Image (cartoon, rainbow, N blue to C red; front, side):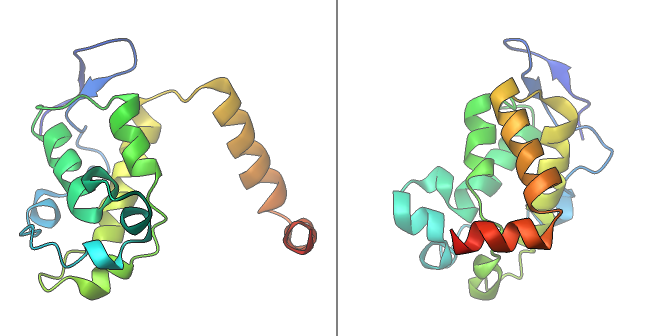
Length: 142
């Protein structure tokens, strides 16, 4: 796997670093059959190939092979994944999509810096709301 190197605007990288990267054996299991499309809630909502498991895997392959930068646009498509893993049930090839997304998100965290507002919202959400069952319950009842 290529080592990340800056190739575009500040904050974009080409290739995944080897630590916690999606494994080639997992990435190339996808045969692009499309059975995952009808199982994916974000694809069903948007109709965009890049918002489907098949499309996101293609983006992962592009970054892995150095053909695509890990740009905000690419990361945005990965961020739209709910990680519900419904696609795994529909996949005849046994692609462990959740495993791929976990590794990809680890790479994103390692190689990109999110905007301040996004970091703040994530911090409040993860460290305050999700860390407290009581606060989460109150939010759910609102």
